[in-house]
Amino acid sequence: MWNLPSFFSFGKSVAASNSLSPPAESKSPGREQEALSAEDAQEELLVVSPYTSRPHLLDLTALNQSQTFLAKALTLLSPVTHAYATVPYIEAFNWHTVFSCLAAAVKSQGLEWKRQSFYIVVFRSQIPPSTDRSHLAELDKQAHAEAMESGGLLKYWFGTPDADGRNLATCVWRRREDATPGSSGKGHKAAMRATISMYSEWHIERFKLVIRDNVAGWDIVPWID
Image 1 (cartoon, rainbow, N blue to C red):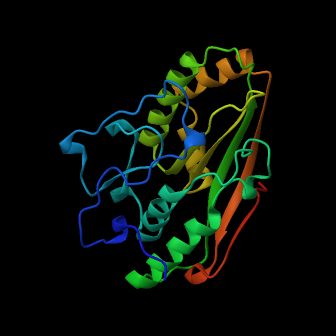
Image 2: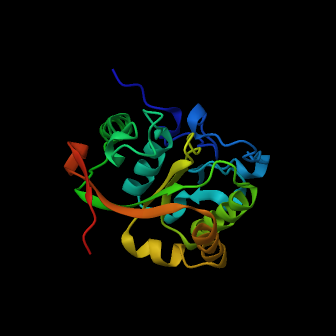
């Protein structure tokens, strides 16, 4: 039987951090992991990225119940292969675990889940291995804070460049319309300028995540405008 993580117990406090540690391959040298203060550990806040200070937390009060369930299930997202930067996106992560957990939580809590879709952005890149990435890390952190303030970002994950400097980052948005203002801040624009000047290769992939009625099935398909 599938055991639900404790943060799906809606009658209890949901801490602003979860008990899952990022997989080893998702940690970058020198990545800052900021500790939460006691006042941040409130049930309406959720850690949804490698950044754990208050500006980076997801405000669950801004979401409907289905979106909240999905955001919590996505805290389980982790790569299933060290080649996540190069394999097809759907093969890179433990999607079956995420949606098995979501389906179990929906059933356990008696939520009526209607078919709905979400917006995924994938950033694939290659950077010379000798590059000093410390500046990029700060730009990424600023861009993420801006996206969280804008709203609608349910999950952000990024890995560590492999031996050839290839990496992957991904965002799961509540809807396509949230991504536009979420990526228009000064931090995001500065990060994109750095990308153009420092990366030897990069490209964007976009997908639609479709979750069927009662989470009976799911699909990740190319996004078509």
